[in-house]
Length: 437
Image (tube, rainbow, N blue to C red):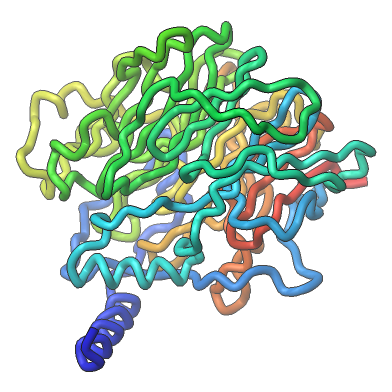
């Protein structure tokens, strides 16, 4: 690339990072069952407010809620994003990042956004493996670490049904044979079904959970764009949760209009499937709140044509008023641009009583909001199978005094000891939150 052009592009990247509007509401205004939804504020240059990734300085760690404590369960990992606890207590961690997607950053704007987003720690090559962590002496630190599966393609979600371990790669759902206690799997995986991938694969993270009886698998598939700017044909099968028949691999769309669903879990009292969803960007720091919601069979949640029910997004062309009329609002907002990814319920938790009934949410943190939002783990209290009350901070302090990201929380899970494990893909650690002694 010519030096003059390169200098201009770098200058443009700096301009993008410095411009944009700012929030007029608090994050709490965009939280709860009825969040405030101001008028869209679409600017010529989108708000770009990156918290540069720096990692944790020696001797530092997040701040745990009163009555709890936090320590590193495992360190020195390579971009750990998602967690799964096996029946014997072993912890699987997906060390992963985006696959090659050459058509997701075309043009000057795409190039600039790619460089700016790289500052957030999202541009490292994918390790493409799942690592097993074992804490055999139950001292809260994993003393055994082995490569459990390797040569994958940006793996993310994992679930075990009987002796079958399922892994959601960025473009397919795989099945591997598993024997209790083994520390690595050498057998090749079998493809259960292909998943939307390709050269854009904008929201590449695919998650998987099993139904209560193990007969069905539910796979989350994010959209291929922010608001269908790559064309609706590029969104076939996306922005949805699939229901996959475990025996045949046949699938159907269980729910749609979910821009980027990540965390999925079964609410213990109602037995309903819940998901955490990242909503759309670039219409203001206060829009659109991310959310958690129960997932209704056959329901449409708005994306890309509308948000929070029937609030029309005029950027989408062509419009679809008939589909918007069917859009339902999600159950509970968790703040605009918080990038809420992780979701797990408190079942089995031995944390203090205030964290005994509800959902833990890993909030990866904003780039399209001034000031920042997210960058923490929160707890949403539930009563009778539904959210009730305001969220409680569980783990904070991921940003330093200069607004740089020492860590970014992603996956959350309750381990066999009743502690909360948190994957930190910038800090390259798995944190363990336990009751204070």
